Length: 283
Image (tube, rainbow, N blue to C red):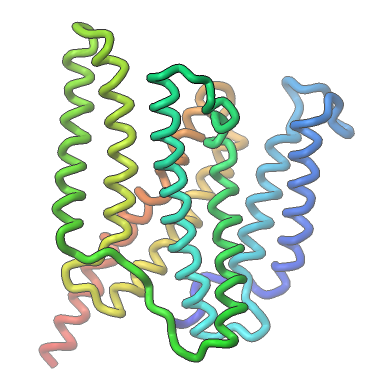
């Protein structure tokens, strides 16, 4: 797989500087009452925005800059690591949602330390990606055999996805129709629905297409990279453009946005590849 949408190699040291600067700004914002040259916490303090932007850009530059020995194998390992990171992050998200729901029902208070996961999820996926990428780069030097992307079989998982999606929309409809009648239904149905929806997305992006070929797998990997770029671009814009409660809503939507954008990009690109394969077959 040829290198795809990568920054020049000199962006890597720039990324390291930005990432370290972002960590410093984040530490100061969280743990210090006074913020360098900025005012106290409140209006006019942009430390958190600057820290977020520096950290995100830094991690992206580190992960998506060309290596000195960049080749097709390295590029594939990078995209496979990114795909793996998206799936792993979504598994963690599912576990977090289940834990939050159980804690809400039982009112144990145990989920409080994890209640701000939506704030940090933006960075978690990039840290997982970088750790995975450099790990597989290290072990790839000892392995000559090409790795294959681990995907769930087409059957029965496609049917499961459809069933879960239908159940999700039924629960949403039921929560709207009956929430005014039964307060308990009002509490349980939305939580159940929002746990099922991530499961649906996870299985969907993890499952093979009916006729999965190496070329379709390439589209899958490249679509993941495009989705990550789009998602982080939108988030960085929102960091400066949106404030208050609306920004918290952006953070929550950001928990699910990468897989959704991936599915849109993937299925928009897929018909062109299938058409190309049909034309090649008829030649």
